Image (tube, rainbow, N blue to C red):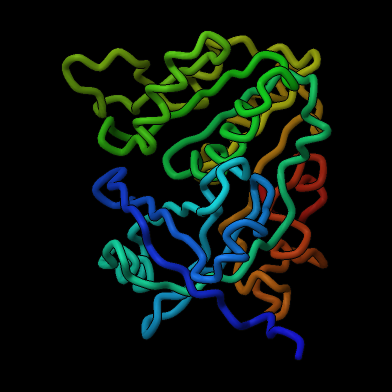
Length: 278
């Protein structure tokens, strides 16, 4: 009998990391041992997570595809289901459907300089991509990561940020918004699109990928285009449009496009054809 596309796989929470006051990262494993080894996905894809008795939530797959045997998802406390997610403990069970959507074009990124720009929870899909790229570091050119948040406490993945900062083959720039700094802060102070102006943004053999709040993404894209990036060289995500993941409910549509099926990853050239998106 064919497995239902709506039937979630049962997974167990193995670890929980408190990233910020409102973001937690959950490491989860399939109860089905065969799936632990056979499951695969690509950076940029997402899943649907069921909190039994509460509902279902959409989250990116935050771990690298190179990490086998488990998945990680980072959840921001933003709605009823996310609140329920945050109350879960190690050993609790959840449901999972996925992976859904397209992904960052890894083959096209090979040999290119990567400029990865994120803000707040926009680092979640970028973390999966960064982990994958670092696992195959010699496949890529320069890797520059610009990441910001409102306050120091709002920076997610602090352990990974420390690891990336220590690598000689990664250029990491961290920033917080004015007023979000504290004594001893050794990063930048300023909004991401402003700090972006001070880094090497040469479009030659480069691809820029940006994820975060729509207003930040808008100004980042404008800045990239102004220094010579073509719309095809700029990639972003439209995760706020994702709904059922299957293109069945129709709530992810932009004109004739279904973000759940065609996205969430798009070039700016593609998005430029969407009505009223940026």
